[in-house]
Length: 236
Image (tube, rainbow, N blue to C red):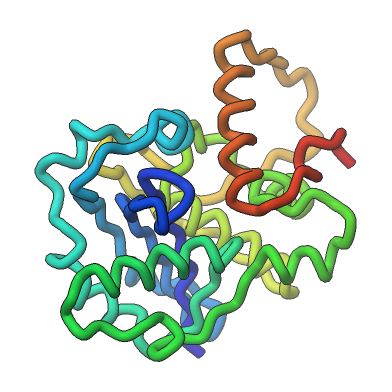
């Protein structure tokens, strides 16, 4: 069984408002084992990125100037995902953007459902953990997956984290063991997932006012993506 854990970053919330994909990150699993055959690309959206979105993923307009347009990577992306089951957290968001990009490309590209099946891990998590927070950060806490190295959201990094979470959610586990430096120079992990248990005397560093403000901005974006406000309730 071939599964592709997928995430995108975008210029804003709604493709119907003209927003575009700016990053695609995919992690391949075959028979629930990570293969290392990943797909990662930044995309020039040919429009400005909303500041609210930049606050979440850290990708700037200047960074994307020399990146390929979606039409230049579209066929390679379709070929990569063809025949797989896509594993996506809040799948309607990402699939909606993908289908919008396929349509805009004007290359007789299929819609996602023509080439893939889709598993929505947000819907799955809500069945497994009804009434609880089920965004990716909450699931990392619930399944003891370390995501402390995630300063900003990034499509490939979030896909790697989601792969680990998904395997725990569905009865298996893995250490990612995949290191990558993205084009912005962020080292996502040198040794894969690291878990610390029963570690005494850990230093607690509280968030400052600027960090708290950025966190609230991030929550605003997530609420729009998920159409729910339960993530702002107190922790379980």
